[in-house]
Length: 94
Image (cartoon, rainbow, N blue to C red; front, side, top):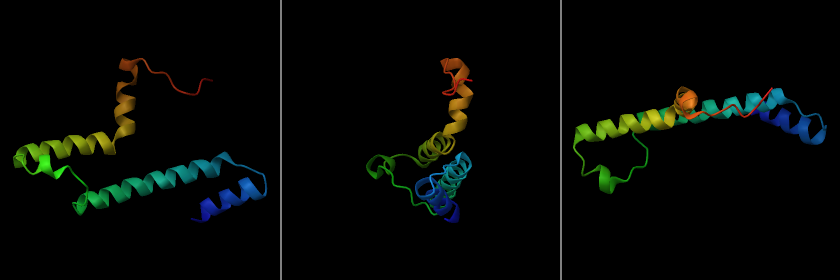
């Protein structure tokens, strides 16, 4: 919270933006998202389409859970793994 406040004061009141504070803020929010997602997963609090999910067999439910957790909790890794195959280039050229 303090880092965000320092970033706002430096950027908007002192007119001295800093890339470092923006990076730290993005990393803190990313870490918070992952930790909150893991906690929600541990508490089984995720919202599902229960009308479909409840009609599946437990083995299929577990497989669907695994596939979706890997898809949504590892998005960065999944994009980096397939980047050469897709022919994507980095956004920053230098």
